[in-house]
Amino acid sequence: MGLFTKDIKTMDDLFLHVMQDVYYAENQIVKNLPSMIEKSTSPQLAEGLKSHLAETKTHVKRLEQAFQLYGKKAEGVDCPAIDGIIDEADDVGGEIADKKVLDAAIVASAQAVEHYEITRYGTLIAWAQQLGRNDMATLFKQTLAEEKAADQKLTTLAEGAINLRAAS
Image (cartoon, rainbow, N blue to C red; front, side, top):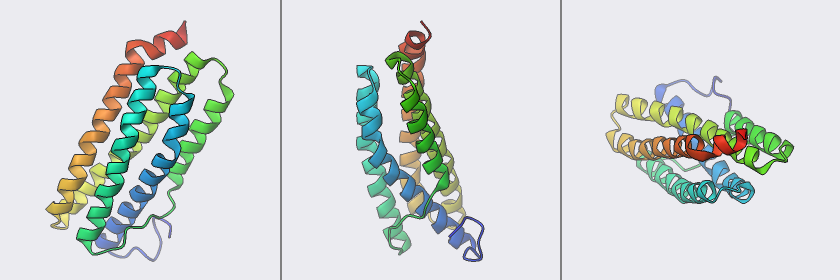
């Protein structure tokens, strides 16, 4: 089902679709983060990505809880946006021989993922509140706070050393 298809008729349909979209995205991130961790040469970056992998697994469980609260089966729908971000990260990472530059590219790719997730969770919070589902909004707020914190940690790593090493 595409985002704007005849299958989406109500706000509830749209809300469910975006939950399925982000569920797919979180599962793809769990699947692909280990590769980014393996390619990282900065110990701080690798550790940060490992920590976020554990958080992402929690995000999947939290989404499963939200689906349960909504009375729906936890399942994903293809998300071309996250697939594109991940594909681009793989393409760029495969083209960089200088490991210091590769670390900078990994940070940039990880932040692209974080920014996508931040937009999705922000939307889900607003819609959950509109639909009277503050129980679900509370779950999404927890995840949004963690996504924003992960993005800030990546910014700190990049500005603290990774970008400087890559540029020298």
